[in-house]
Length: 149
Image (cartoon, rainbow, N blue to C red):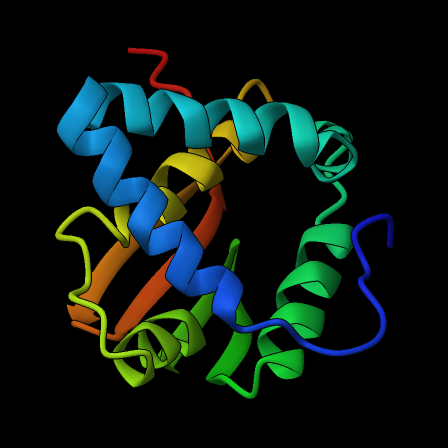
């Protein structure tokens, strides 16, 4: 997997990300923030996107498992039918921002949605994210079904 960090886990990154999201959304607007994360997903996570273009979900799944496990998230991944469902019961990023005593940006979770859209761009897949609480969500990876009517 291309994106495997080693060494210490630097959870304060989430505090910096929260502050950056707040700044960009306030200074340039939420659409600019979404575009930054979309481009990050599309360009920085290119090898995951290229795998999805070939129908290979393995690198995305390895990425989810590795980073969520590394940050001690409460999560599970279940494959069913034509979908892969990632259920995060406690997001480690939100948990850490709270631990730092920072106010969580109202746009904090939109980074995940925009990043996922970038990762899936042009692949024939989509990831639908549904927030189930302030620190929990369900992300469903599935093939986009073409409407041929």
